[in-house]
Length: 226
Image (tube, rainbow, N blue to C red; front, side, top):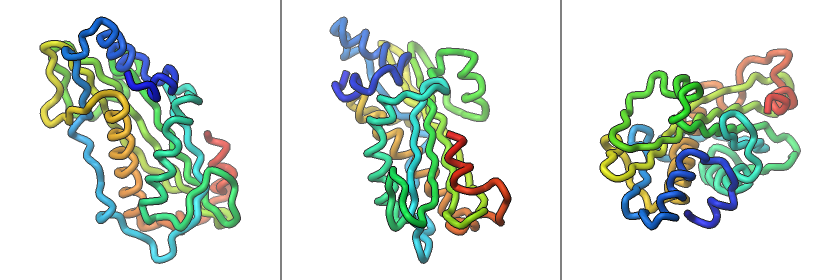
């Protein structure tokens, strides 16, 4: 397994533990990692860029089964910051407090789909199928944007993604994208799921001003939800 992914800790218990086991046994040629093809990237050309892009402060957390994973958060944060800045939707993106900055809260929760209790909720409404000896990890992503204006309401978006490990005669879902393994798969997943969140956010008529003011919708209140 890629060294940098090992350093990210225990964020991918089912999928990457299985991959590590096969590599340790010298069976890497029998296992392939795929990014699900049902959740493609939304190109920047489809974003609705605001006339005056706002400044935002990012609050990002990667979770494993709903529990904060500090190492994985640290691993992914530079990639998230770079994609946000490159999106054109924001004039400046920082992970520290900044004057007149709105708040962008991104949470990505890794859910091993082999664990029935957590998987059932994630799989609701999805159309992909598993075949043969296939292990899959789900990624449940939520994005909340709160403008800097006092009392401005929060805008929310939600998206999902899946990475598959196909072993032996196992088959990935049709259209799945084969990768060179761990880091390429997770980087592709992140880029695609975040692009869909940003694309949907940009098309919200209330972006970037926010929804009509509500008493509890300040950036400070949004930050407390992390």
